[in-house]
Length: 392
Image (cartoon, rainbow, N blue to C red; front, side, top):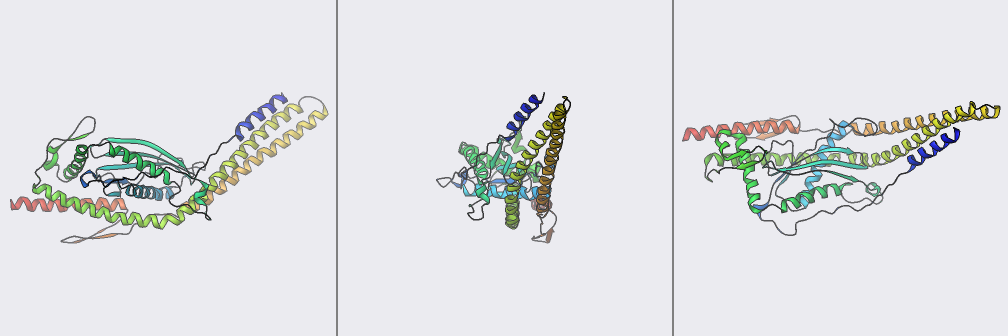
């Protein structure tokens, strides 16, 4: 029996100790358009600030999930992806948007699956204004330890490759679209925006099939006064969303230093915890097996066997305690990360908007401010439309 226990120990520890880790500083380069794209082929992109993934993530010591940090990352990741798309020179305006309510040619939504400084995993979905899904894909990347080397810092984000791959996939899909499809996309974006303000006036130009895809059934005249007003409202909406880009940019810039410090520390902590848990698991396995072996020896008869059994039991108990101590040490590292995560919080300043007849102050989160702005735009549109009907 004792021999079998030792074989069990050998098998378990051999499996527990086998790890393979490959790291590289290379990452996928960004594909850049090699020719100027005509204005009529440019599609605008809206990147919704990412879902922090808190509804599905388990807040525990294995996942390193801190709510405050994840909320900050949801903006940081969206802004960093927007920068990659802009640098690819393959799009029109690329904006980070607070919600999917903004009708735009191409919308990117995403969820943070894992982010601990060592690994970044994102679920990303790209759809267009027709309601056509371009793709839904999970991207994951390991950071190189060189990314956090202060003596020889690398340029760009530690996970720049993941943003480049998303941008490259989007560009590859867009290149497959014909001129007619792109023109249709741009028109559907405009009609959906118009319909959100005046359903009665613009409902007949669009139909949504059972497959969820929007299709054009007709077009208003270019000099249609209602369309002209919608276009002016849409320009105002773009201008406001452009001001939000300043907020997102400022926010990312302000969090960059503490965030990079957190990721560098988290990278090391993640590796240390993995090693601590590996050792703790091995010690616990060895300890349990030693106790079993000690019990078997103690019950086998002779005095020397009983003495050896007692030693085995005592040694096994020590190894198990050692394993628990290492887990407690790992928990200390988690608490250190928690303090850093709690220090990153988002603050949004009220925005003052000057209108022709009044001054409006928007308050609350960026999402709430945009919601208030859309209500103001609807009021402006209704007032202008009422004046138009009176003049007619």
